[in-house]
Length: 66
Image 1 (cartoon, one colour):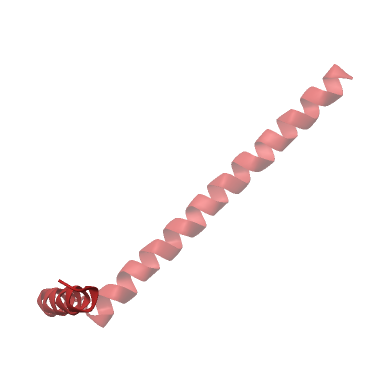
Image 2 (cartoon, rainbow, N blue to C red):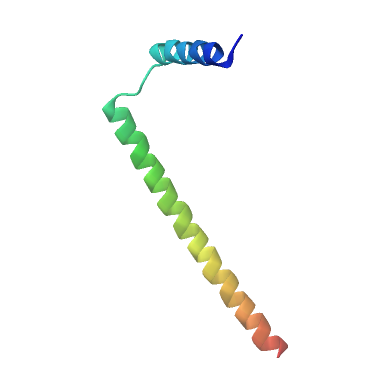
């Protein structure tokens, strides 16, 4: 079987699967987008606090050592 025919079969199968896929509506996409944005902001804030704490502890440790 040549590669062009295999590609055509592949595209046909992909198209068939896409027709059977259940796509989210606009409200579901909006809701999950808000959840992702809030989660990213919370994780970023947590990492910022941890970074500041570790930087402060490292600075204090080097001041004591020197």
